[in-house]
Image 1 (cartoon, one colour):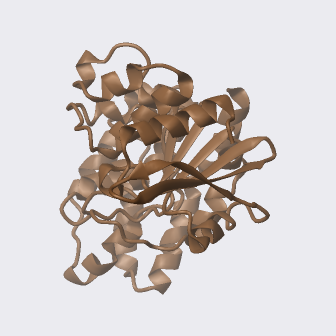
Image 2 (image 1 turned 180 degrees about the horizontal axis):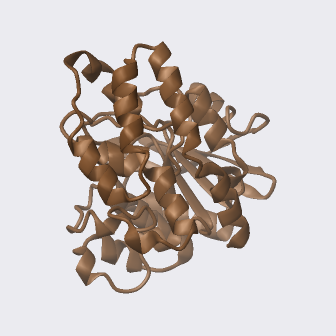
Length: 297
């Protein structure tokens, strides 16, 4: 636990985002708007940041670059000391219609983890260690977190993650998805629909850090096992050699496949996004969790 939090601390540096704003100015972000954002992030109180953020004056010409404000230094949600890391494609919300989520769930993420490391997590409006404190309603079975909960249950041989994700947060009892897994994203730019954005250099640096690569089991739920997607994983694990494995059939004749490799004692999985729309059946996800648990590859 202490080692993981030490590695996490290395990522929870907000000065990195300030440098990122400098880079965005080279791409068209105005200095005036960049300084407005810096003013929001200058405080050490999250509630003050939220209030300042709500008062931002966003020029029309800046709307086109609004998505790019999502932090490439985003760390994630859940338990940093878990044995299971799930890397999703991207966050699924509309930045223009949900600007508060851009601050709470992306830009402020490193700040929030620093607060948690300092023992001040209770002060946070949004706690990335348990985002269900914000998203309190029961989640539908086709929600991505519901699919992640099935995987976590199968991996650990429990059933509480799925039970809790389908209930209102106040009704949760026992271990939850965010107790048993850590979740991050391949792309940091939120999109309501899959954008298929390639990994940026900054994001590659973050995902290649010791904090992420030392998880014992890493599921890259970012695409099929095609060669071009396997090549994406090589951006994080350069010498990886993935082997395709079947999990079962879906539809009339389609075969659910994953790709697996063991790198320095860590199980690395490449698979399609874990969602109902990607054709995943629950028993396929359970089979993936079982294989991870039993090291059956």
